[in-house]
Length: 297
Image (cartoon, one colour):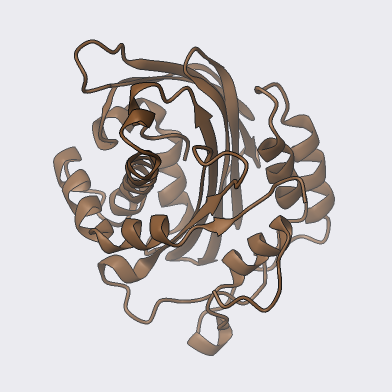
């Protein structure tokens, strides 16, 4: 959901917005064909989302922030066909795609989608509980809210760097929420976030979109883009930076899935099951088959 760790068939060239559609529509299948019906969107949804995206400002500027706002203002996943995993056990319920900025190899981009066997409100409950993040996210010393308003949060993060002569990484993030209030009838929940301040991170932008499929299932889509002063980590090679960054993003987000599906699990069980789901192949396939991505196109 943000930088968690700092350490296709190609018919023609796609621009970044088309690539987003491909990610969302990957595996073309319909919910109705699988016996699941999507909830209807309000007729004024796009105007509401466009207004929301315009108001969500204040983070460190980047081209990715603008691209994400464009995607949100025209959110294409709602009421479109999407892939329902045939086998919902472990790895089949998550998809990862690495997005490469060819002008800057160390600018990490990750698209992720998960099928969660829990109602939207059950997933939202865990995402909203920021003060519990450090219990279920690996590699953090401190995560907490410094501001919490109905439609705007500010969060503080301190990430542990396992090298004795390098200080921990500290940063603050803005979050903007749509809608402000979640009810039993809420079919869409968006968390748009961007970097507020950091001495190490140069930029960080992302979004989480929760879509209610039915009363017991949620589709989770996320984009993360971040760049940093990688320092010593870059000296070990760009591939290592990519691997550990993507793994960190995926494990942290899988914690939401596991926690929502298994509300009685302990923090240790949530982390353990997240690692089981991720395995090794998903990150390996993602980092070895990056998709060129230019947010300005």
